[in-house]
Length: 510
Image 1 (cartoon, helix red, strand yellow):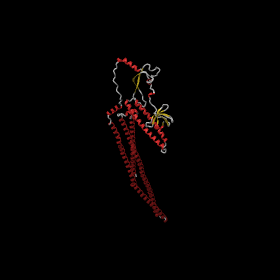
Image 2 (cartoon, rainbow, N blue to C red):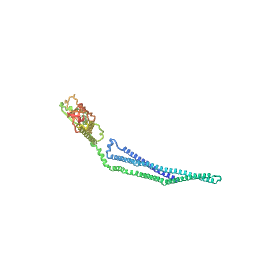
Image 3 (cartoon, rainbow, N blue to C red):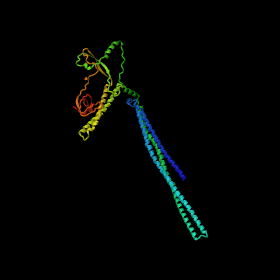
Image 4 (cartoon, one colour):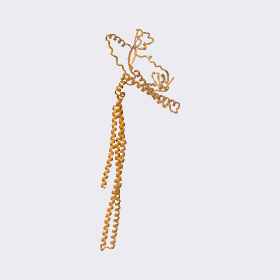
């Protein structure tokens, strides 16, 4: 029993140490996955830190020498994503699976050790019964011997009667019979104990130890497979990681330094003419030149319309003078810092984008109007009024886009300084009366040719909240300034002079 107990303790400690090692490995993989997760997070923060953001930086990124570095940062993000994927695979395929198997092995080991303990307890109980029956047999046998000795003494006594002898013999016979029964019980218990002991040592315990051995082998196998899976997981991820690294290498090798500089030159080509040569200044002619300059500089401001009125029957000497007047376009974004060529290119890009979006909204509007017409013809297909919110929203979008397009087109025509030719008019004496107010800097409406082409009536209310649109009330009389150009909008003028766009389906042309 002592030898068995010693070996049992060894086996119990060994199997426990194997499970402890498996648990340590699970914790190791968890920490390794956390390292990968933190590494990926730091890589993403690094990429975010050095990425260029903002309008100005986005424009700078279009340069060829800036875009490759942005590509490197993008690949670094992909690299971080693969590292996060590696962390997730380690956690799910290794940690979770091994933790489940570890829990099962712990329970299995506990059950096997309980079987051994229970078998040993049964054997110990059987041994106690054996000892009890042995002691009883020993006691009864001594009593039987005493009874036999007492019978012999009675028989040898002269004074003993026949009845006394017979009584002593019966008592001795009873004790011997009882001792024989205890002997038989002791022999039976001994046989039973030996059988249980042999069964324990030759069957039950070896069977349990065999199960513990198989359990230990599975534990070792799980640990070995965990080592392999740990390495294969990262190894399988290496091709994707290498693709990111190869992409960075390819980015660097595809850079052409000559193409870089030529692209920079092309992007910032201003188109400005170099300054002319400095002319020789003849100071000997300063007096006459100064007199001439003063005549030009201090000209009075003249109302052009009044000078060319039919009532002025006077001879007018006209001298053209070119005066540069800065006409500033509507404020959309600060393009003044760009050279003319770049300014024009940037404005054209904006115009193209707005025209594409306007085309999409126009197609949506046409589709909704067709659907509304179908619903009006057959009410079972749908309610025409349900489309009204969408029609109004798209109408607002189209009006806003038209306004933006108009502003950018104005920018295109006026992004450089516009030279307006004014006339230096010399008036002969007596042609204009002193009371005529001709010295004002303004242009009359005679130069604005925007004539209505018809009249129309508003069928619905329209708030005109979008940029470029004008509001109207149902039943209001409007002047038609421009017909529908195919986009579902017309240009009208209200009685108060407001001009703007309204949906063509919202009016009735008279």
